[in-house]
Image (cartoon, rainbow, N blue to C red; front, side):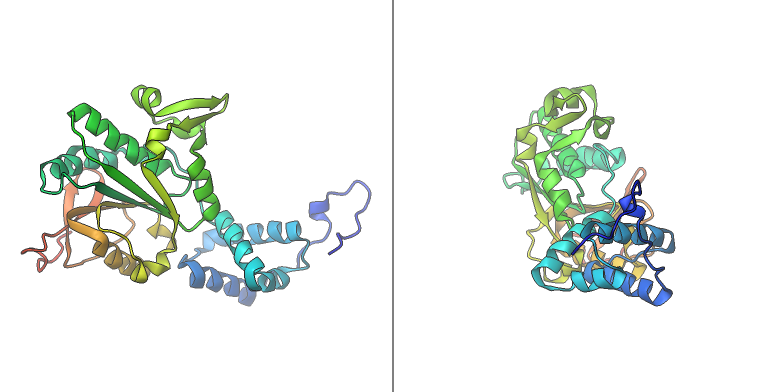
Amino acid sequence: MAMPEQKQGSDPWRLSQLSPMDDAELQRWIDLLEQRTGICLPKERQSFLLTSLAIRIRELELADYAAYYQYLNQGVQGELEWELLVDRLTVHETRFIRDEHALSLLSRHCLPEFQLSADKDKAFNVWSVGCATGEEPYSLSMVIDDYLEQAGRSFDYHVLATDISLASLITAQWGIYPNNRGKNLSTAFRERYVQQHDNSHFKVNKAIRDKVKFSQFNLLGLDKAEIPLMDIIICQNVLIYFRQDSRKTMLDHLVRFLKPGGMLILGAGEVFNWKNPLVKSFEFPSTLAFKRLDAAGEQSKAVSQ
C-alpha cells in the first residue's frame, strides 16, 4: 500500500487526520478487547486506546479504524498483530521489590512455615500472575534465595511467571533492565543478584533467572488451565483491569491451584466482599492475603474478611 503524497516539509504522522470514531465504533473496539482478554477499559483509558490505534494504523499505512479492525481479524497476520496491540494497551511499568509488605509475608511467614512442613523435601512453587516484564518474579526468586542463605536452609524452588503479552515475556527472559527499575534493590541484593550490563542497564544473574519459567497465559483460560499446585500465588495490579464480577470468578479459579496452607496474595483494594469456602483471610500488615484451608477439616469454613 502506497504512502499518501507528502507535502514538502510536512510531518508524515500528521498528513491525514483519521475520521473521528463514533460511539458505536468505539464500543466495538472496547468489546473486542474485553472479549479476547477480559480487560474492561474504563473511560479514563479510552483516549489511550484511540491514540494507540491511530499510531498503529499509521505504521501499517491503513486507511481508517475499520480497515485496522478487519486486519486484526484476518488469519495468522491478525493473530500476530493482536499480540502487538495487546502489548501496547497493557501497562508494564514496574520495578524490583515493588511491594515490600507482600515480600515480607513471603520471607517471614510462608517460607518458614514451608520449612517446617512435611513438604520441605519437595519444591516450593510460586506463581506470579501478570508478571509483565519480569521484575516481580525475579524479585521473588531473590527473596527466596536470600531467605535460604540467611536461614542456612536448602530446598528447591521454582517461580512460574505468566502474562498475556508475549513481547513483555521476551523482555523478561533477557533479564536486562534500566537502572531506575532497580532503585528499591538493597546494596546486598545488587551485589549478589545483578550485574551492570552497560551504563544505563543492569542484568539479573543467571542463577536467579534460571529459577523463573516464563509462559504466555490469558486469564480467560483459568477454568481450563493445567497448572501444578502452588505454595504461593501473587496476583497484584492485574485484577484492576477486569470487572468486579470477573475478578471474583478469576479468584475462585485461582484458589483451586493452591496447596492446602498455600497463600494467595492480592493487591490492596483490588477486590471487595469476595468469599470462597476454600480460603480464609490472613492478617498481615498492609497486605491483602488469603490462606488455603486444610483439606482435612477446614474447607467448610467461610471466609472472614
